[in-house]
Length: 252
Image 1 (cartoon, rainbow, N blue to C red):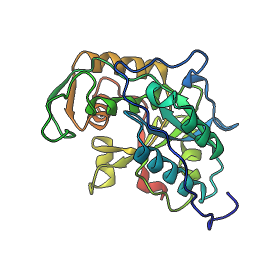
Image 2 (cartoon, rainbow, N blue to C red):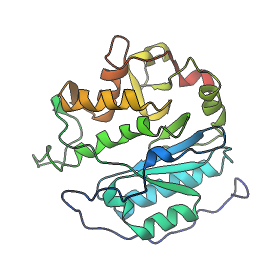
Image 3 (cartoon, one colour):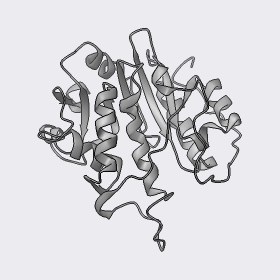
């Protein structure tokens, strides 16, 4: 982008019909090989499920708004195999300086209790349901070519530069994460209740593998999918507890 006043341009989107089961990531597309900047950092978005025009437009808008803050780190987007095979959308992302990364969809996850995100009037919450797509966001922990990733949901509007958040993570080997407190909770409670929609992480293949096994064993609460899983696995005393984390408000 040339400045903060960059005009958001309309784009052409191609809708793929759902594929059950989704296609695998193509050979040579391992997201774990993506290394971001020379410092090993990147902003990472995601889009999963049917990858419809509305979802494509939302991700592109979020990326363009982030680019208006003139970030020093590159942008990437994790795509499910179904979304990644949409060559037109991948080309649009590349044209917007967003690197498309194919990540595998989580399959056969079991969880405990109610699910918050439901399709009204439907009961297909298992197998290929929309809810199950939420687990796939956790692939950010497996982007091991990166030393640090600032994950952003595609409905997040970034209004000012956040490079200092990534730099803080990259320059602090003792930190594993920088978290956003959930809802209106106080910052200190982010060590137990945090929002994965804005989440700086240090990818770790060992932690990711343990998380997958934990999910497949049915240990996570269902409620809001990836966020419940992350909180249950990574909280103080949880099975995936790593080095210290910090709360994002300290950096804003």
